[in-house]
Image 1 (cartoon, rainbow, N blue to C red):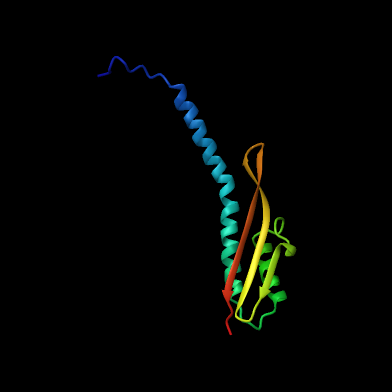
Image 2: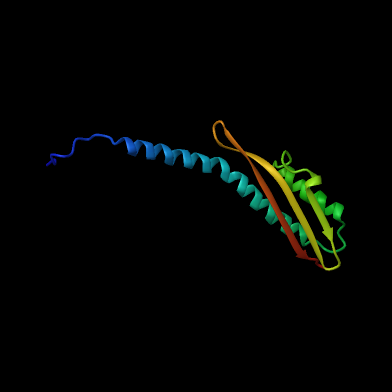
Length: 123
């Protein structure tokens, strides 16, 4: 039994909201990998910072850059953007870089990523 008010007509606002929902989903699909890569890099740098105290800063830089190349982030991160300072009891690593992200076709934005890791040294 059909109600009299049911005509099967589409509502224009429903179509507009569907398009907005799809655009937001597409933007998240494009932007999320940049943030996930930054999170993974931060985790790896945190792990590398815990290297034994006898490890030289050059070796630490080599390990970080090896990971950067493996993850194909070398277009965004250069050794000059990584600062390593080893003290008597801790190692501090600063990473600061920019990455261009395509949000929607024709709309790109430069995202700035920066973090600092400070870990005690293992003797």
